[in-house]
Length: 241
Image (cartoon, rainbow, N blue to C red; front, side):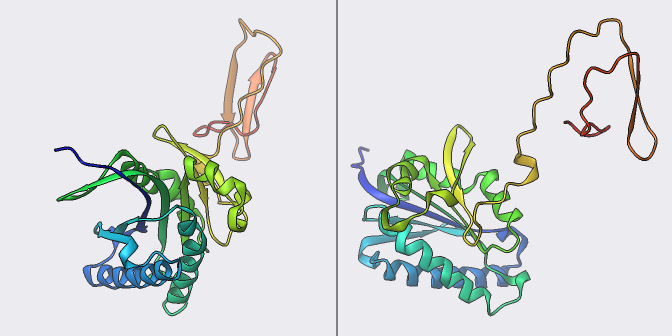
């Protein structure tokens, strides 16, 4: 069957750690999610006649008949504010924490739903471990926003509607480049697991014939050798420099 693609803005929203919740908790979170989304979409002019929302179990897929800019501003700001108002009424353990992913491109719809590589891309960047870990590391945050490289380069970096590219950080995962920001943070926190280790400094020269013994005295590592050309103080028995 030949499907005729159309150009649309794509939003994927996912609830953090939904699988850890009980069924009644999931139902309450989903109700709050739809309340946040409907109000913010309407305020951005992305009204019911210009959008289609498909439930994904622990989130939603929104395909909007619109250019991408209204999804970035005012929708995201309004959604983040509505989320904060909701969470102000519940304890932190009951917070609704969301991952928002924004992309645009060609999509088509058949009897089962939307299809297209750009839909897949939006889901993949939303589900990236880097994005999940950025929200997990930002314990004061209530959401994380990720935009595709195409969205960043065509819209965000040009500062349309006072968008701030400096609060985004470039990330790479699964062969894709995307940009992440955490509302409320000057820049997204980078989890320790994703920081790039500093390469070890080059030794002064070969040390053929030299042996090095490393022992631990409770206060640090002790190196016994004829000549030490380079010691990285970060090295431990279970650590990499």
